[in-house]
Length: 131
Image 1 (tube, rainbow, N blue to C red):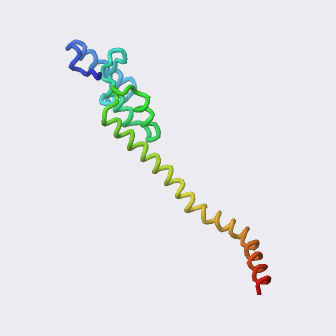
Image 2 (cartoon, helix red, strand yellow):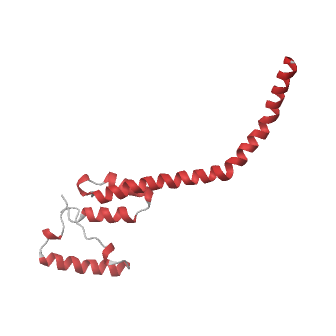
Image 3 (tube, rainbow, N blue to C red):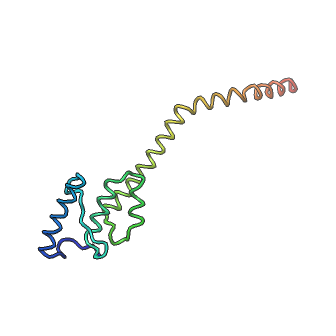
């Protein structure tokens, strides 16, 4: 079960806020990108998964939600992971299509030129035998 700040005491909230600021400064990242968590206590894990899925490249999003415990994967993370998976497929298909468009025509022409004499020869032999 996801537990958030409502399960922490006032002292803990102050200490957590100080730690967020400290980590943000040390790593030069915004405080809204610093997620305090406790794996042992289950504190804020869904927020961490949400942020990970948001910032990871499309090809990595789904694996995070697949491997995380179901109770810490929010609907938001699941939706973003599914969309990331589809977007990755589109990226790959787009790359393949561009290759086919750019290189495929030349490949088809080379194959056709290579087999055309044999096909033409076979057709000519057929006509000579028939007529």
